[in-house]
Image (cartoon, rainbow over all chains, first blue to last red):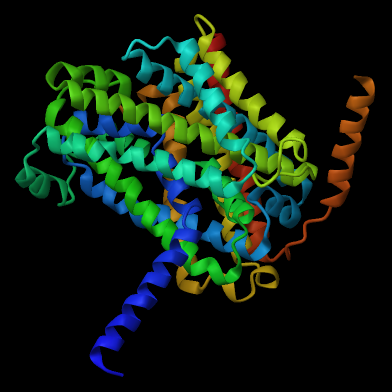
Length: 422
Length: 57
């Protein structure tokens, strides 16, 4: 074979791989980017405003943490062809199954309320009234799912994921000091010493990295997409790419607020957007649009995670490849959770701050169980066969799960007893 | 409405029967993990109750 033919052959092979990846890409990127939901954006904005670039190194550590947890759902979904809820019912019996399902329903609904809080606050900056935002979001999400094809839903959602990258140009527009980012951000350090408040911020960042709905969502998405065992390497690559994207977005948010709002107390991402608008209108606008997009992505994934889980257990048709007539209960539960969560935001005087805090508490009742079940299921040789966890995977996943459970539990407890880490 | 509720209750019973027995092999590690989860959840519930009592007072 002459060099030119060899070059053509290599290029052709690479192009085929890219084409194959584009077909299989989706669940990993969607779940990871949606992880930067309205609550996540607030956490990163507050982290940057409080500690500048000093905690960027900690965010980078979260890449392998998110990857190792989520890639297990890819293997489990592709091998068992079951969602996480059904896998728990089947393996651990009805008690743990109902516990997980009911807890997931509560956590998802509460989180959905926080997504609506973020979306309405973001668009209020542009003068859009909350009722119009809630209505437009419900209609938009209806259009996205009612086309009757998983493929179309996924590609539209990927477009919204791309919009999440808006924080990257925003960061360049504020002219951050690259020297400061490299010097303060990449070398592990604890600004102001390791105290209770810093620990709270670290816990909050970990808490937003892995949420219970993510495990249920990705596994169900892998099943609905029809991924097979042979697709696992691509699914893992998709998840890895997604985990990099989610942290890159988080880092750029920290860069924006760390540059412009360093030292300012930030309570919400919408407050950060408004403050940014005073110094640079477009950066503030990007922050607000990004917040809306983050809330929308979170809402798209969270409402589906619940509907898929219910469909699996109750035996309803539960695929995005089905029309509304073929899967009425699947779509009914989807719209029920969506509309009720949206309506809560419109109730005057609704305890939205309490709901936002309560999400953390309820989440820590489900997250440890979901993570422990995940590792146990990945060690079930009878089902997983060659895709069972290896010893090294168990050690890595075990350490990650112990750390996540400990920190997210402390985070949840600290929302119950705020003086604990002050 | 009553018939709908009956059907729903029947469905729950059917699910409970279908998943009555855990399929996974109850090895020592699995038993330990499930026990640890129960203890963890009990502690969390106790904390929530404590917080509730504090709020009521």
